[in-house]
Image 1 (cartoon, helix red, strand yellow):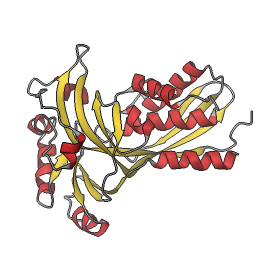
Image 2 (cartoon, one colour):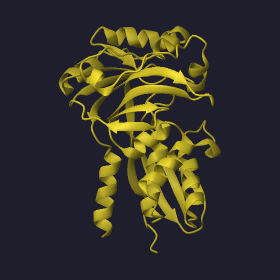
Image 3 (cartoon, helix red, strand yellow):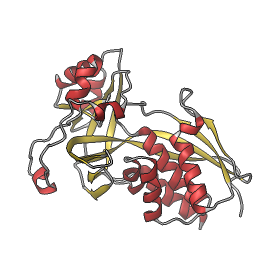
Image 4 (cartoon, rainbow, N blue to C red):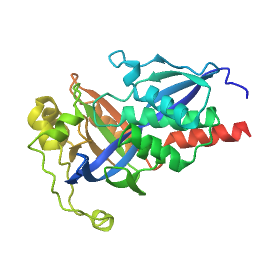
Length: 290
């Protein structure tokens, strides 16, 4: 097998939770939810170089995250162990998606490593096997493996693709990370929102994010960012925060709002995507390799 001579480049897109209802809790502690995942074109970039020595090495990543805890590294190790592959990989994670923001950056990085190395190592795992590996790494990883904006429920890993309207988002990161586990453990979190359905959602039934009030009560920065963005359009927190977002019909309107963002926060203008650019990159790779 010929090894890659140069690192290959792969996108790892972020996501927004357009709403997030906590509808129950399982005996094992996992929360049951209903949500819509909207993929956006804000993305990390993953570089991968195949090696012949069987070692997984992180060449670039977050300085405050140990290599053993890095989801991108753990994804490569999980794929290697499951498939029995004897090849290795060097991994560069170029971060553009804020950490601890509720945008799924780490989960998306893991999904990109799984899917790309499945091609580069020629391990030949099926979509079902990759989804199973993804679930072992985190609840949000499977949606990035599936690669489509979607309705999701269960623990977030049962999904149905949705064709969402073309739109743009202003995403504000108030320079504060949120610990997801502590938010879900907060006694103030309600866990009994009634179930809804896709038809009711599409008919305009009101939605919300059950985690938003909990995070805003704990974080004045998140509450302030949400209040500021509400001045321009209906705004909401994504996932467990800390990022908040608002939807706009066009890029010009979104960019005009982003220019007004207070300087103490990071702001991004991102386009909603029906399909992951990673899957487009994988298809292009397969065409070149034929």
